[in-house]
Length: 136
Image (cartoon, rainbow, N blue to C red; front, side, top):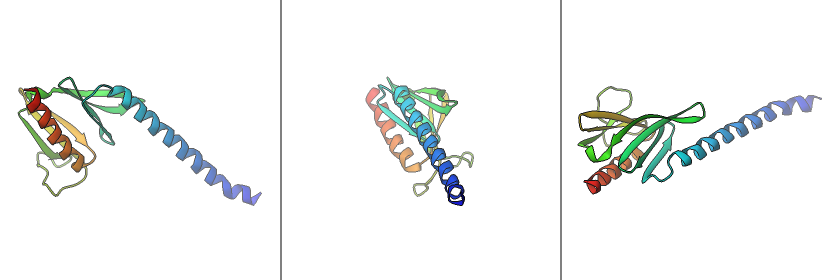
């Protein structure tokens, strides 16, 4: 009986890890559906973003679905900046890593798209500017 009680916490850990894996797989499948047909897409801990037909949309995953947080017409982009996520208006240095946001400015509108990784945000910034130039 003691051996059974020793294995009980492992059983609970296995069930917990299995359910968390199932939830992540569900989130990724919902993202694939949400971002279907997009030219550029990302999913990370900060949320999801995709570029479809010249519009950049970003969303957060809440209650089993993606809730749109904003859209931005990519052909109207005047400036794309990489900003620190929590320190107000401080731009991110080239050596900085970690959580950040892309600030898109254009057509009298500003939009911040959060990223979990600064390196990925830099790649996205380059790709967005290339797409904006191609669409003009």
